[in-house]
Image (cartoon, rainbow, N blue to C red; front, side, top):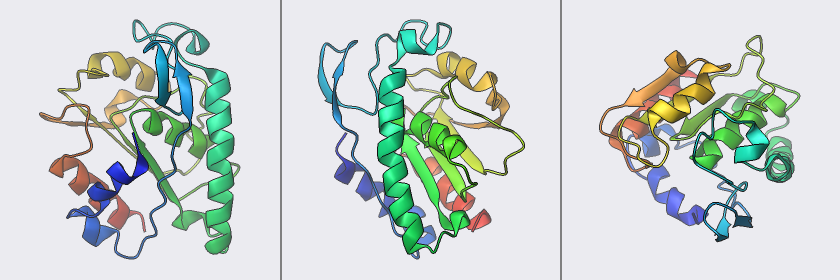
Length: 195
C-alpha cells in the first residue's frame, strides 16, 4: 500500500489531536516478488503461504532475508529521526499495519535501546523476534474480530508464543483495516498515556 494512503488516518480525530506535536514518518516498503500472490507488490517481505503460516517454521511461510532487509531500511530511518530528537529514544514511537505491525514489533526488539512505544494494527508477531519481556517497551496491538485476511484465530497463535494474545486488543466488527474509529481512539489513548 502506498504510504500516502495511510496519512489520512493520522489526520482524522481523535488521532489528529493526539498527534498534534508529532512528526509522522511513513516509510514505503519496497516492491518485491510475492510468492503467494505470484506477482510483484509493495511489501516488507515475501509471503510464501497463508496456510498454517503460524504453525510452520517462519522461513517456510515468510522470507527471513526480506525481514532483515526491511529492518536495515527502517533502522536507517530511525537513526536519522533520533538525531533530530537528540537521541531521546522515548520520544520515538513506531507502528505499522498488517505486515508493518510485525515489522514494528520486530524492529523495536531488535534495536539496542528502548523506544517510546510500538503500535501494531491487524498484524502478527514474528517468531524470529528477539522478544524480551524485561525490556520496557510499551505496546498497543489491536486486531479486528472480523479480519478475513488474517483471522484472529490464526494470528493469535503467533502472539501466544511470546507476547501473549491476552495483551492484544480485539476490536469488535473490525476487518483488515485501519479506517476504524475505535482503533484511532485506542492509538490516541495509548500515545497520551505514554508521552
